[in-house]
Length: 203
Image (cartoon, rainbow, N blue to C red):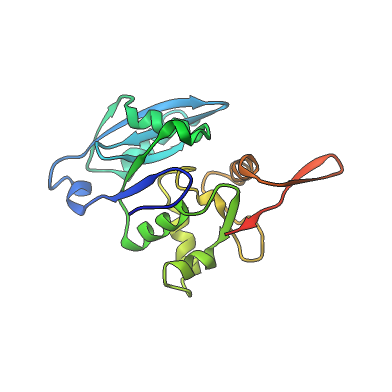
């Protein structure tokens, strides 16, 4: 699966045999890393990044990773793929180069995550627009479920999805984090009573 965003990312679907360990037991490398004021858990297989989430809550992110991949073996080890992901978290895609994501999900989830990769930085889309683009215009609610199950935060930019009525909607990792990401990517601001307000552009 190819995408046309500002940096080259490819989704490699994880096979059932890989996920279940029936082909060969999956080895996942993971590390906890600090980026600016936030800590993240980044995990990868030999094929690509498979998981990325906030890492502030002590051991809970690692336990969630292990629940997400119950048949894998794990190594606490930083690898080059993690460093590429960090460059994207730092919003320096030119230093990351090409990045592969190795993801376990249904065909529908993978299609939604692929569509998310096509949303340019500084723009937003709606659940309904995604449903239309994946060929299921009445599936806005299932799209919301797929967006919420995104296993690779920020790099798959589920924070760029809002409600059709213009409201921000929810965010798996907290609405304040969603607002912060959108503000970092904002293209235009207006100032009212000394406060900056983001003006989204719809994709």
